[in-house]
Image (cartoon, rainbow, N blue to C red; front, top):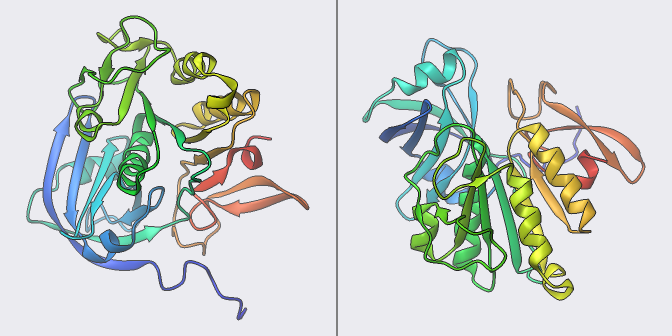
Length: 293
């Protein structure tokens, strides 16, 4: 047995998490809030939990963390029903308990010399961007801009933004209410023709904004993203085109989620050459250039 220290050892906790609220949104989407003080105290933007959706299911399901309150001990997760596990999870009600492991994974790392944080979240990749935006707001000194894309109804009721964002196309005014309340600029993108929403891909809207910046302003930009693999590949290409640092949080199927089964490995480019890394504990956050070479 290796005696090399594991960076995640001692940081993942198993808790009996009580469901505090479970709200349904269009598109078979749900926001689940649980009381899980150990996870709430240690979670960072980009980390996730692994929970047992139903006592009858042996396999746990990974869910990204959207918000936490360390003081009050709760954790929020947004998920979409895509299979039997999440279908059963959607039927759980307030007061019931879930077995939950977390927080798991390496988080995003931000840099003060790059205060213009560009956050791009697609579908169920939106939660880590919400978590990161809230953390940057708390720390101060950052000017995050959050773009969210979805091809199903957004899991919130969009409202016209009162925050002016130079470079935005005319009429692109829909924003996430929570971001507005925090004073953080946000805009939405979709191909579904929603009012006030950019008609196109999230990367198309990001390009419009990046092209509107001066060279000095672009030098302050750092990109963070989570979403489906094709979207992340497009984000990586965009970041490379504008020569911007970019971190991506990968979405992969997982079995153990603690690095033991190697069922979630992806190939990354290390300085020494190609290598296989586990998304659960070596990620889920990676340098985009390492994954999408």
